[in-house]
Image (cartoon, rainbow, N blue to C red; front, top):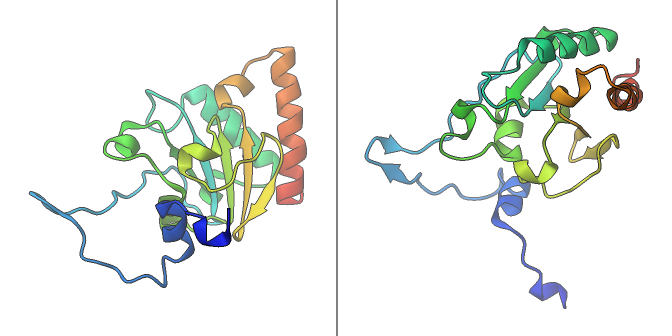
Length: 175
């Protein structure tokens, strides 16, 4: 295969060249032009840290998972005001189209993205990385971890997952 035969997916080209491409008029629907709906998030995003979770049936997170996440943030010297928590499974975010990394970057401008219970490919990230391996890519630090529902239990497996997560968070946030 020569370099002339490489075909890049459209979403990757859009992300790489979003500020250099000519914008065509938006497709119109009977209700008017189609625009991506704003992401619903919990927190003020003061430190541009996006936390993506997968919690079906909840607007953001079940209470026990939010309590756990709040404790993690406190251990990292952060608060809910420093982050934006987005539930990728919430109906408001997946009604028409799934959330993409382009939407997240455009609306939340994250410096760090923590994925809990989501594969990078779900967001149409052009890279893949294993859980508990922080990765710097395109001016952002990514971390993938198991879902918060797996971390809130008091099992031996959960304790191991929490310790792996804590090591990664210490590295990312210099704790």
